[in-house]
Length: 326
Image (cartoon, rainbow, N blue to C red; front, side):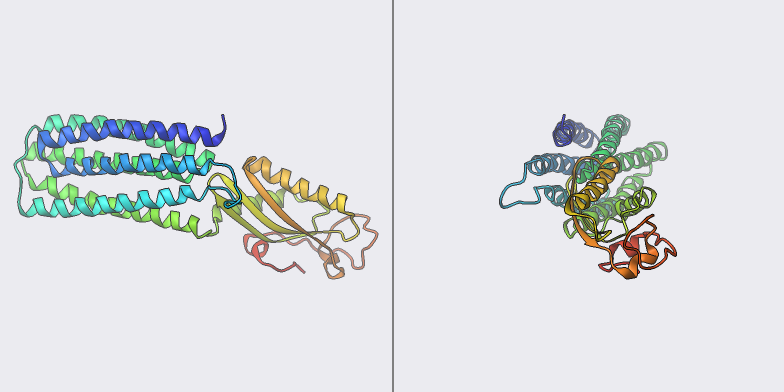
């Protein structure tokens, strides 16, 4: 099964399960009138909406390239994650408002033990589904699945806190605890929404992914070939699960076109082994110049004009510069 199809199938389950959890949370809320449980119910509405938005975005991102989308449709995942993060933040703001309102004007609570049981069931389900989504999202480089996984795990920890607060309320009888707990988690939910939106905007704006680049630099240094005199102007853009890599590779100037292409193929194969087949590589080949002889350790070079002195260690900083090493 293709990665894109697998992502869509996972998101279908997320959307379906979120509808079931929504129903359970509202049963718990109407049974108890607890604003803490209302927190869970409101988050469940977001879960349902985000689940179907995520599903649609994965369907769009899986579409092949066409004439008006030459880089594919992968950016749809970042847009989906941004919408989901906004919805999470909005839900947190509503929860904060309702908790303050109930703190000022308390509401009588009922069947707290029954409510705790129901939300505990939703917490277990959310944690399991969220963990699975996060693992698959990282493996498949899916921003939509990662956002769904983080959202569901956040929802789980929120629910655990709510259960702890309700248990304390049940023991002590202090009803203000319900509103105080909801207030705290409303703030936490707003912060989680902000982080998801921030990450999504970074993807939409083609922000450099330091984690991927650092890993790539390590792989390149460890598997350097003697004909790779220099590498610079390295850039990576992520479109959904596809990586687009641009770079300039300096090779001995006397290699013919076919020999130069073999070096580019070797570079592509190396990166694909580490980062998967979902990779587009655009490499500009440069012929070496005399001033680079002292950083080139190619043996028996027929065109060498200077002795080899030292090899330049490729780093995140010097590989990203549009300038040949000297």
